[in-house]
Length: 86
Image (cartoon, rainbow, N blue to C red; front, side, top):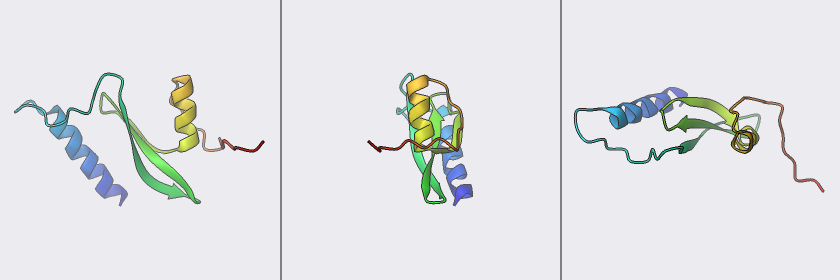
């Protein structure tokens, strides 16, 4: 499954950056990122992040993504768990 996802992303990245014809992909607006579901680890869903320059991060937890969006620093922290306890 991971191999298939990597192949699909590679094809999409190549298609979007190909200069042979007009690019097919118009989803990369300045500053945009794509968040794609990837897997689950011990019941926690993980996501792949693809930035506008086609670079990315793999298998990030939702909490890591939320923290990264809030701080602007894209780092892994697998122990980070955000709870809704009052």
